[in-house]
Structure formats: C-alpha cells, structure tokens
View 1 (cartoon, rainbow, N blue to C red):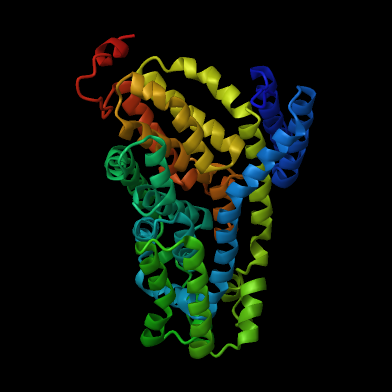
View 2 (view 1 turned 180 degrees about the horizontal axis):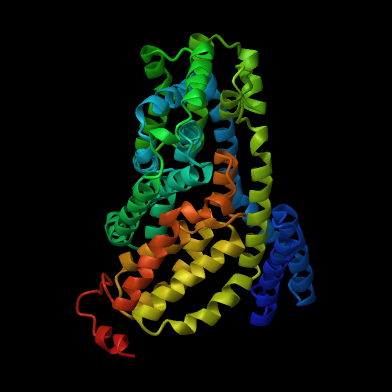
Length: 475
C-alpha cells in the first residue's frame, strides 16, 4: 500500500516557515510594511517547490489547499455578509443613531472602558466577536472620532471586549470547539477559563480607565461634534422613536444567536430587515439599497467627518480581506495536510514532562500555529489534540487543557495580520493590526497569566486519585 502520510523532515519544515518570516522582515526593512498578499503567494510557491523536491506528491499539496479553503469559506462568507450588513445598518439609521446618542451620552474619560464592557456583553449574547466588531465596533469607531480618541485605542478596546465575550460565551464556536478537542464539559471549560480571562479583562479595564483619564471634555472638539450631530440629524431620522426602531436588526441578531441560528443566516436576515427599515423609515429605494449593500453606503452630507464615518461597508469592500483570508488559510492548509506543522510540533512535544513545561509548550505551539496557519481553529485543534495525551498522562484535568487552547489559540488570533481574526478586524474597523496591537490588552495578558499559573502551579487541577501528580511535578 502506498504511503500517503509521508512527512517532511524537521529541517525542511523549519525552512518553509523561516522563509515566510524572512520575506516579511525584508519588506519591513525595505518599505516599512509588508505586502501580505504577495508574501503569502511567494511563501506558498516556495513551500510547494520544497515539498515536491522532498518527494511530497502534488495531490497531497492540493488537498491541503482545498482543506484551507474549506476552513476559510464560512468565515469569509460571514465577512462578506457583514460587509453587506454594515451599509444596511447605516442606511436604516442604526449606526447613525448609535453615534448620535453616543456622542451626547458617553463621557470621553470612560469611553474606552465603556467600549470594552459593551462589546463584551454583546459578544457574550451573540457568541461572535465578528458580529460584535461589525455592529457595535463600527459604531464605537465613529463615536471615538467625535470624542478625539485615537482609532487604534478604540479598536483595541473593541477587540478586547469582543474576544472575551466570544471566549466565554456558550454560544461561541471556538468555545465549543476547544471543549470538544479536550474532551471536556462545555461549562467546566468556561468555568476554568474564568481563572485566566477574568483577571486579564479586569487589568485591561484598569488600563483603559487610566488611558481614558487623559481624555475629558477638553479633548472634545465641540465644533466638530456639533457638526457631526447636525450632519446626522439632517440626513437621517434619529428621533428617539426612530432610533428605537432602528435597533430591531441588532435585537434580531441577539435573538437568533440565543436560538443558535447560524451566523450566516443571522447576518443575512438582519441585513434584509435593515434594508426594509431603510426603505420604510429613511426613504431609500430598493435599487439604492442594493447598490449600498454591494459597493458600500455613500452620502454627501456637507460635513466631512460625517462622510468619513458613514461612507463605508459593502460586499466589495471586504474582497481585500477575503482574498487575504483564502491565501492565509491555503498556506496553513498546506502546512497542516503535508505534515509540516506536525513535524514542527513533534519537536516541542519532548518538552511536556511536567505541568509547567506542558502548558507553556502548548501556549507557544498555539502561537506558532496561529502565525503559520492563520486560523484560530487550527491553533485550537492541532496543538490541543497533540498535547491532550500528555495532559492525561500527567493526570491534569481536561478543562485545563481546553482553557490553555483558548488562552493561546483564540486570544492571539486577532494579533496575526494575515490571520482570520486579524484580517476581519482590520477590514471592519479600518485600523491595521500593527496599529491596534499595543492596545488589545486582553490578547496578550491572557496567555501571560496562563504562563504565570503554569510556573507557580496555581489553578492547575488534577484528576482525583492521580498517582503521577507529585512524581511528575518534581521532575
């Protein structure tokens, strides 16, 4: 029987990954910003040539490409539907109303903290950081401009809230996936995550509160805010009654999330409802709405800031991000299916002789997989399954293994410029990954806390009657 599971050597595997980072580094030195699309194309070509030279058949490489594209399809469709939803929410008055009243209600010094908390609540209710970023996140980005708060700071707060909500929501796909991979109960998994996620979120809120103290009423350009309020009120019906009606699409998304309706269906239905509201309440025609939802909302209000806030969205605006997602996942699929990723991780599996080394190795492995596979799902699945036997051998409970998968695989994903989460938040919030990275505090505080627990042995739980616990802890 033909051996179809031949894997490249560790050195060959390492070479393919090093090539990616060398190309990125050279571009950073030369032009200051890498062209991620072409970087991935060159990396894919280089990897294919090296693999075929090593005896890996094209059919296996092609299987990896198809596998990556399959993983990318649903998230990329969601991304396109969010691109369709955003202009519908603008035209229906949802986002203009949130901006209009947000500018009048939210205190600048409390804005970042408020943003993180509201996005966390929204993500817990919907189970989706994508939905939260594409709705509340877009509104908060608009409000921040009027309050004089840098967009990168706001994006960091949006992501912190969206990620924690997604991470601990029982409705979240990544939460359910991590529990399944580690063969543990969902709610035991969520309870376990509270020990790392809660302190990380509290510290994040404290940092946002401290940073927010520099922004007060004096930081607001009242002339600009008045112009924004006037521009919105003159072009949209934002009286309290219309504002409440405009919230129907968001309420619909929450209800469908609670009922576990698929994200694709939720986005589509919410988009249609928002489109109908825009036609009935704001006076747009069906033809105009079709154009907005495809190419993005456009309006000339006479106020440059309002135009900048509202002229956005559309399916076509997401194509840059969608193409990057497919390239990133194709690259990751090749590495996964041809055995490159497994070859790399196997070298790290020798570092799992005790709980401290195992958890730290798991976190580092998930970070590496996030970088090379561009997918939080792959970063949860592969290291999670690879190291699960080691957790069992040491008698460590499954909810510690599942927690570690999320403390690394899930939260680090938004920090990868070519990863699914990274490209989504960049495309939706209009701020590059490198700009918001320093302010997405939760994303790197969580793995840091997990590492501290691993070193100190705190909150590392063992199965009852485990005879190997003391012996392995002292190795």
